Each structure stands twice: as structure tokens, then as C-alpha cells.
Length: 398
Image 1 (cartoon, one colour):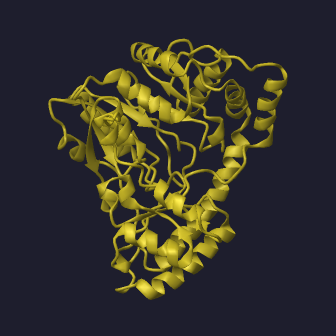
Image 2 (tube, one colour; image 1 turned 120 degrees about the horizontal axis):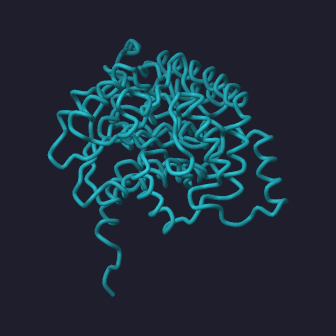
């Protein structure tokens, strides 16, 4: 019998994250710094809102675009935080997480062969989503010397006549980088000069530390050029509820909605009700969780630097991205050896793009006690594997 799997799917690179989770799942006493998921349960009042919706019999489909209540809450939330006004009726779409929103955005704008500049390192699904949508992913590498902030010049160097869009994800997974206003304005200038659209994944927007998150759509001239993506998973600890959203100009949103109607029908009803409660009444929860992440952030970054694993200061999301140059190992060999020898799970930076090679991603969503345990184990590991004096910590680039 012939092979029925399509070439396009066969050519997709498997996720570089899952392998380490699968190995760790077969082992006892593993401290995981690998998973990019909040360690907190969804706040109680948000859970109760979802549960009560079930008791009220709200178990059917909603409007394709999402409930009117949730779309109004999203519009109010964005206006309150960033002063950007989206119309709930025709500029907001509720999706099954940001993953669906990203695919819809790409599929809505790309013709076969169109190129998308994908800023890396980035979430493992970004390049794959471009390819699944029929486009060509063009990696734009960032460097630790620039605190992993992409520059306008780096983008412009990769533009061709087929370039149609720029895909950015800041605050960044895996690096923890946050874009400065200067860098954002450089991206905006490139987009305007070359008539490009910018897809801005801002799912970690509320998790910033000593930095300001600037909504890309709020930049001068970028409102019509931006497809804004965000959701409930990270800031509100609602990963399993699967609620994301996209905001864009009406003509782009109409195209995305058309795809969403055929693929999904509507996002989970219970999750939508819970999301209204979160957006309208969850600010204290966001602040409390962010404060705890900040303590863990400072703990893990100081620990890495003390061990010679030079780590620039992450200012967003909940990841540290230290260099493992002091070990003399590749990032994949480092991660596998650390897991086997000391039962600590981290992810190789190369899983997030070629510019992540030589780094590891460590999530600090785990408890402070478990982070300290992981650092103790890592100290033993580095005592055996360090080949040079620890490198000085890199200052955060402006």
C-alpha cells in the first residue's frame, strides 16, 4: 500500500520540546524546568464562573466570533491597557487558544509561496504554522548581544519581493526578551516601507518585570497593519480552558472568521464565560502571580550566573535562557545528560530556531523550592562538566 501521508506534513520538523517531556515521564524524581505552563491553578472565582455556566445550561455553541459579552470584555481590556480601540462586532475573534489564532491569521493572508519573516528564537509552532498555511518561513536570527531584540536592519536584510508579513512574539518564548520602544518603531518603519503586515503574538503581555509592554497596534500607523494575538492561558493561568483571541482590521478579520467557521465553529462555551470573569475581575490575580514569577525569575537567573551559565536578564514571560558554553557541550547533549545524570528537565535552545543553539530554556513556573533543588543538582552537574572559568553575566541591552 502506498504512503498516504502528504509530503508537506512529512517535511514538518517534529517539535523539539516533546522528546524531553516523553523521556522525563518515564523517570522518577524529575524536577522539570521545561514546561511552558503556569504552575498556578486557575483562580477560584474564574473557575466558579465557568462551573455556574454549566449549571445554567450554557452547553451549546456560541456565535462563531465568540459571545458578545466576551468580545466586549476583550475590547474594553485592550482599550484600558493600551488605548487601542477594536470594535467587538467585526474586529475581534475568539479562538481555541492563540495557536488557532496564529494559523487563521497566516492562512487568511498568505498565498502559496508568500514569505513570512519569523523572528527567532521563538515558539516551536511559529515556523511550522507558516508552512502549514502554505507560506515560506524565513528565519530572522536575534543575538544575546542585543538581548534577543530584533532590529530593523536584521529584518530588512531578509526581505525579498515575496515577503508579505513579519511574525513577532514578544515578550518572547523562549528568551524572556521584551522589545524596547526603539526596536518596535524600527519594525514599524520596515513594515510601512515595504508594505507588510505584522502578526504580533502578545500572549505574555502581562508578565513583564521592570519593563513596559507596548502593544504593537498602538504604535503610530500600525493599527491597520497589525494582527494582534493574545489570550487567557499565561497571564490568567487558563491553559486548559483554550481561549485565545485575534484583533485586526475588518477585512482581515472577515477572512479569519470564514476559516474559523469551517474549522472550529466556536471556541469552548464554558471557557468563554470564564474568560469574561477573568478579564473583568482578574487583575488582582494577575498581579499576585506576576509577583511570584518575579521572585522565581531573580532566583533562577542568579543561580545560573553563579554556576557559570551566563544568563542575560529576561524581562518578560516566565523563561530564562542561559548560555551553556561553559560546559563545552551542544545544547541537545547538555539537556540529555542533565536529565539522565541529575534528573532535571530543560529544553535545548536550538528547538526554538538556529539562533537558540548553545542555550537552554528553563521555565521558572515551578516552585521556589523546586527551582532551588534544580540549581543544586545543576551545580553537581557543572562541577563535572565545566571546561572553563564561568563567563561574566551579560548586561541587558537597551
